Image 1 (spheres, rainbow, N blue to C red):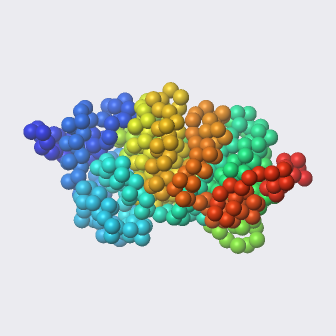
Image 2: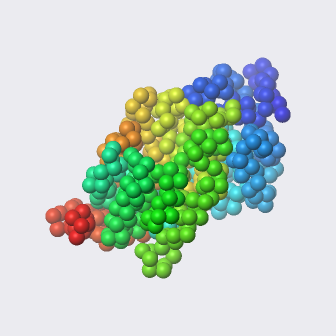
Length: 471
């Protein structure tokens, strides 16, 4: 179906909904590279005005990628909750924006309608919103998940402790892990990006992470971020796997490029659930069964030539539609990781991070962000400070904790343990409640959550030294 709008004394034509969404997207290098971006700021504004008049129901009747040829489209449409959609079914995209911003649309209302919102609806309305709109609405969205602790509660900000090492050296990983724990990081997950695909080496990593969590009774979870098929093999061999990780995208073809399908993700989730590890250290007290960890990023479908002419931000929102179907504990956008070909500079990275967080939370997905950039992008640490602070204000579920903010294995710039301390201090945020109680018990923090001075006889340091010595 064609769309049109008169603006600036000219009548603008848009071939279909896919073309309209792409032209309405804020400028970014990836869409320009794909040849789908608006040719001018005037055309972009005309597209936004036309998009504002589109009924939300149109997204249920006009698939951006054909239903017959894409399993992500089938997932989105087949699982759409008509009852949840009913309260907003009469709205246009522009009306939807106003509805989201209304004071009467609170967290409970947003949670109730989330199953009725498709990724394309979320992407569409985000294109009409200012940065402050994205922050204001995302802050109202609450998505709570559980495994060994509780994530996503109001007033909380979790941290993924990311102790990567370029050769998977266990002592090097352990040193970074101890460092992060003493800074109050690690409540989201202790997650290692391995340098190898060796099942034996991966199993060694899983066992080491499990050992420190068990010995110190830390209410958190571990994850080795290898391909999902490797994790399934480890589960079959009896490895103590907590979370199953996988990078995902918003089209069937892009997921095929990752070597995955929806059926494979279902198999992996069932395998992880069968271990029943989401309890309080095996004492029979159930905590939660959110066992999946997903990562996404704008530009992944385009980089695989699997975007079908859909703009990268809408493809990203569709990835959250995939994540939602598997009830993950964690999902995060690695916002600036793919490079300047897709998000050119700090301005584009900041906007993308706010869009991703908004869309994920609106769909009911626990959204964190790897606030990051590569060294050849037109961005720096000041840009990341800005995005990190905005996302903290918007109610971000978690950020990364990388020693010195410089990942020596993946070779990119992320956020540090100190960045998390800054966010928690300035915005009055705490870590997950179970983890906060552990930090206080170990005398790492006081009752208010502030770090205590370390000493030679610090009980946490003593136990950590004993663990490292194998005592």
